[in-house]
Image (cartoon, rainbow, N blue to C red; front, side, top):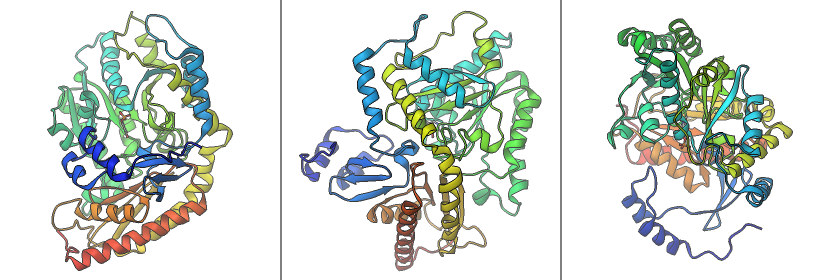
Length: 464
Ligand SMILES: *Cc1c(COP(=O)(O)O)cnc(C)c1O
């Protein structure tokens, strides 16, 4: 079932794709020459492409297919909801059962004191909501000049105008610019930037950039700080243990709002329901999307603390919302996803089974000559490729060249592992079993070996 057996030959699909489909985050003319890899079905942690390859998906799609592919219960729920009530909005004092039930369920699994949800269609949209929400919050409290949001270099918060501006990626800012009122501090990336400091001292120093920035701007102008508990798209940068406690202290001390972007780290990814719990963060707002529905339907949102919700509700309308805020089909599917996560104890599986098993094997990758450090929290991990482990050197030549070559070897070996610069990252479906982890690791070793041999042959094992 669900297998498309009568699709066109791959080359024809690729030609149509190149002719008509503009891909996100893709060099479309380069892709046209090469042809897209076309996925046709999925089951658990496995994908099948149009050539019949069985690929292990080390990225859970784009960090989102947490319960794995092919759970037909979600389709059943979607069909039933479409038949019952395909659409209604949640504007102007109306509601419907799926949005009500999902908001209540999210409040149940969210940390204490976070009992309110504003729905969006994606993570980017939810972060756009957050920009407006924190500014509205201070406006209601009689401090409308508190508008600036402090974010981080190499953070990722989506790709709308607001989300892309909150993110600290120069490549995104270069295409279309950046909205006013958002500034960036450094990232807690010790491997690349820590120099001779210990990770702990470096983490503290990077957190204290927040304090310096607040004092520079004047606390009376600062609305909020936003960060991912673990930077995802930036390369799975797991911060030193000193980082988040210091960020929390600074936010508390200056009374600025703390937004945890949990789009990746939410819904079990780090071995707790939310990354904020793993890192001891007490946010005022959490951004959610991706794992909320395991990607089966597009839905995102902001989980809002009682304190912020109370202020927002105290003074008339919040003039903001999306046609699809709390879409009934998406909400019903997300609710079913969370039901499965709870009943099958998927968060516990990550914490007690998959993480401990993978962690040992992941650390083992540092025995490979290309791998400098291996980091893992829950089921998100990264390895740093380097020509010289002792000095944590970068490769000579353009950054990302080696990562790209390694990614291509993974692809050839039917393993999806992404590269960010010269880091390789994974974020597999949370249901991955020890046997499947063995396959993932075996293919990763093979790909690293092939990458290493290729670099050697091409004389590319040189430090910058
Ligand atoms: C993916 C992502 C987003 C953006 O979500 P979209 O659904 O792609 O808009 C925002 N924040 C983080 C941390 C993400 O990883």
